[in-house]
Image: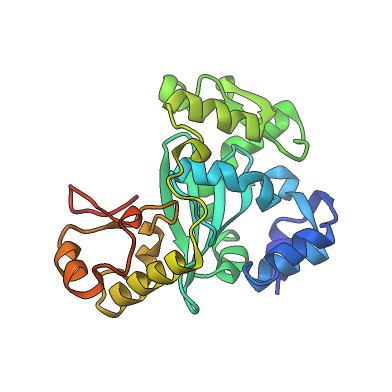
Length: 268
């Protein structure tokens, strides 16, 4: 299943995955990611142009960037420059893969299945150049050498501080530390500091599921917009949902889960 990915990005510095990690994500991670973990391991691929990461290490960072707890998202890879790739389980049948560009603070949905991401999207020449910054990666690799697991090529200054994508601005640093520095610069507080209600009761979760199911049936949320649900304790929605909520599910969903966006666009 991974032949094409491995052909383009052969393992260059990998370690075996522990059984507890496989068990933890057995029911939530896509099959192709589990296969990659089991058969090849975590670490650098393609001389470090991409690294398959332990999601446990990066989940708090992803949630902080997004401003919400997202248990159905799995961060699984970083680029050589720290951009974060994550898998989203949207519904029972729908999924996608997104990338968070940490320099521009932008998120892009890349492809609609994990298998397509590994064996089609990443192996296309144009995508290597654009998403993985292949050209400057080759320059950085020639200058600094191979990266250790957990390290990336870091821009200093970073883009928001006036930096640019040039070899002169690059150095080597730890990815987690670099993310933390960027988050502090942007003034983004830890997701733990922003959490509203992190231990919902069973009844609360049933109420949330009712609201989600009801809105999906009426197409208020397309599957690819399900990431707008903020399970940290708020439910982002369009203003015109206020009317049907009060007539259909009033009293069945706790107020702490509800927030109707003033701009009518929903959550991020």
